Image (cartoon, rainbow, N blue to C red; front, side):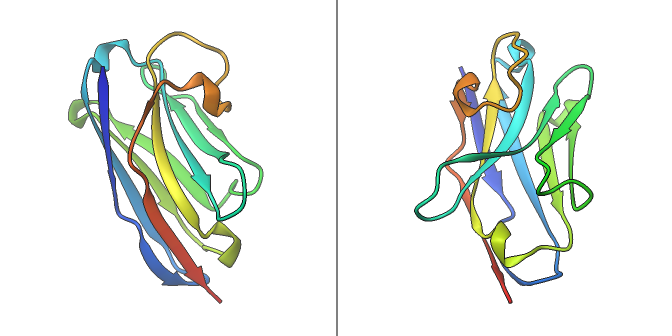
Length: 125
């Protein structure tokens, strides 16, 4: 089992920045990848960014490329999502997820088997 706790959400104006943090505990050694997903009201959960736990390879949705950066601190079992130049359409609940097995499906929410509780990000125009 892997437990995930997110923090860092909040309300900002368009153009502002936020940094989300996800602290993992439990069977971290079995983690293949960590990802961030988001879900806006009335919409399906969508992929935002992911990072392979050991190799550090990163992946981004086209909508956030150049604005968001995912990173990890293996020593702290922590993943970050730095979000810059935020837009109103970034408003959503952001979820941290962990993939506890080897998979090539880094951008698919169904391929992640551990989830945090979510943190709200609100961007006003």
